[in-house]
Each structure stands twice: as C-alpha cells, then as structure tokens.
Image (cartoon, rainbow, N blue to C red; front, side):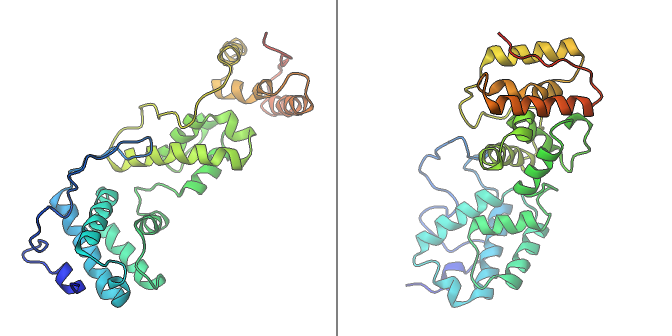
Length: 270
C-alpha cells in the first residue's frame, strides 16, 4: 500500500503519472434533476486547488487522513468529486474553509460537510443557508415584490415554490420543495448564470388549472398583485364545505383588512 506522501507527491504541480487523468472519469456522467449545470471538464486551476486541499488535510489529520483512502483509485475518485463540487469557489474561500476545518473538526470532512462550512462562513457568493433562506421567504411571502431580499436567489426560490403555499402550508411539507428550488438557483449563481430562467419543477404539479386561472383573473379584476390574489384565495384549494377551508377563508378575510382591501371573497370558483 502506498503512503499518503507517495499518493499526494507532486512534481511541478502535477500528480504522479497514472494511466488515466485522476480528475477525468471516462464513464458517461449521468444527468438528473439535482445535478448542477456542469460538464465533466475540470480546469487546471481547480485541480491545483483540490491538490492543495488534500495536501493540507494530510498535514492536518495525519494517519486519520490515510485511513480515509486505501487505494490510489479511491483518492482519484474523491478528488474528482471534490473538484466538481468546488469548481466555482475562489482560492481564498477554500483556504478559509480549510482553516475552519482545522479549528473545529477532528477528522477530514466529507465534501458535503466542507460545502456546509463554506456556506456557513458566508463565502458562498452571499447566499444564505437553505433554512435561513426558507424562513426569510416564508416571512415575506405576502408581499415579495416589496421586500429588500438578502439575496435575489431567495426571491426566485420563493417564487418557484409559490408564495401562497409558503405562507399557508407547514414547514415539513414546504421546506423540501423550497430547498430543491433554492439549491438549483444557488448552483446557477455560482456558475455565473442569470436568474431570469424558470426553475425545473421539483414535484408533479397536481393543482387545478381552472382554479388558478380563476385566481389570476379575480386578482386582475380586484387590482391586486398575483401574489396577493393567490394568498387570499388559497382557501379554495381545500375541500369545499370543510372546516379547514372556512378557517383559511377567515384568515384571508383578516389579511385583506390588514392590507386595507375592502373585498368580498368568493365562496367558490365554479
């Protein structure tokens, strides 16, 4: 078995000679709904930064680092995954995260733990952590266009998840959907993309198109924003005649008065 020094030894910034590029997996990369918008190509700069990260971890964690990898193939695969995950971060951000690992972790972090540290340190393009972004979106879901958002990605994730659902439905149901949309938008931000494109739908939309067409036309007739209309008429998504529908309608009537709107909310849309 080779020692960590032999595995990580470099000559002019390169890895020891191997039969394949340690950052290039010749197998096809499978695309799925949660994959970031990336190609299998990794820049020389990213490779160099990942080499630096692994060399620092070897120095920091010693035999604990060695115990994470038994073969050269394992470290090759690990480096490629780290490179794909970190290719949009600067060297300064990565160095700060390594120093945080050194101060707080007894073992080398997984790539997901390292990404979480990057997020928590605020070096992730100004993007707030998912849970913080979710709470912000829920808090200001009634009038999102009037909010000075901590980051545009929060607004776009809330819009993709639907404002009235964020305001009205429970966290256990809504956070996974919001987090899905938010992570996609965050990846686009890191890749330097604009935020004016639609986000892929996370789950099958089973809503009644006739109802939502009614909400849209009703809001236009009342002279209110689409966000306000969907928030006020959310009770219509509940079973007709049910107690929960009446409870949500009462909440909507109170909210309309708080907004200074003198509206008669409809009982049904059919």
